[in-house]
Image 1 (cartoon, helix red, strand yellow):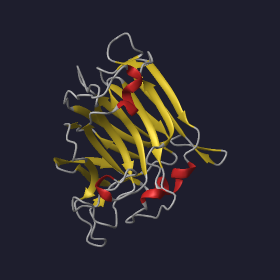
Image 2 (tube, helix red, strand yellow; image 1 turned 135 degrees about the horizontal axis):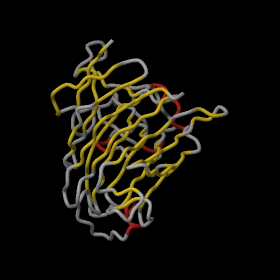
Image 3 (cartoon, helix red, strand yellow; image 1 turned 60 degrees about the vertical axis):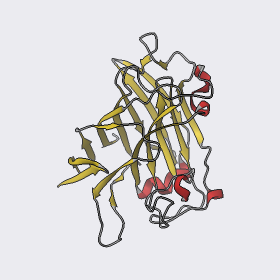
Image 4 (cartoon, helix red, strand yellow; image 1 turned 60 degrees about the horizontal axis):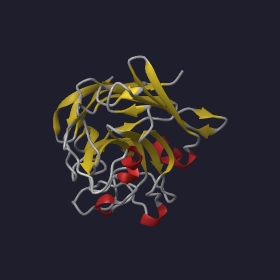
Length: 264
């Protein structure tokens, strides 16, 4: 029952096991490239649909975890190392000539988005971005139907002592840590429980309701990795003392050991 997945533009192929667990042990380095992301595939083409055969991450009733290494000194103010889920592919061609879409309509096409990680060494944030006109992909949402700003924020660091660069923080962001999110349904409500762990220490946060994301999560969303930067990232890291104009230090990040498994 073995299948294979790969990271777009990042060969070679890496194996995963189906059913209740997906494993990616090979790891991938994500360099800061504002106009490029990386997505998981089962294969590079699906003859039946004409779209790439994206791997749809099963989330509801499962947990998703991954090891993150932002490096030392690591991504600075103005950088955004991101791991997120998207309702790809878009049924409409974007400005790059591809099928990428997200809730901020980057490339001109819109779709639902769940940001598992947006981070630099000063902050880690998780945010949901539903689209009220969601349709099973391949499809496209209207810009006004998507919550570009996001809802149900969970944030660590950004001026707090729980997450940041150095041993004085509960989670030292300059050392590898594990991010995990559980997707249980409790009393009919889909929730998100987030744990960030390192050396026996843990941070916990919760998204009280992901019901606005239930449809795209039920269909399965495409995993995307990116590292980008801007002169104003203060919406993410401004509470930590970062001030605009910000200048990202252009550091690569490393993701490893992606695991998706059923909750008890």
